[in-house]
Image: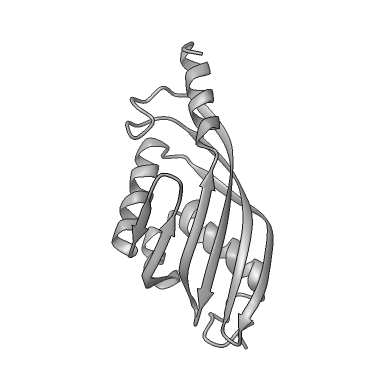
Length: 152
């Protein structure tokens, strides 16, 4: 029996679901799982952009991995609350490690190792992610890249 109607029986509770989805996408490089976990009308907001739909999310994920191919996300401290019989809100902190090995929004590859924190707030309904708000400490990324290159 799933923890909420419509959700995969694989998950024992909301924290298991949130951490499991994070692992499937990032640790296991299951970018294709975005079609299963993210709803068709998904909107992901961050200070840098607003992305609508899975194709945009997949493109953004691939771009991130092009610049940081070894990126690892460790989900931590999930908090959540039910918003109905088949929906919930969640927040979780994420610790990220990565090496700047490819070109992208942070410039040409530098080989800098980066360690950053992020927080994601999400709205799930009827088994899939509907909306997400993500904050990534991009200042920490820039600082570590600039320190590694001697430009800071």
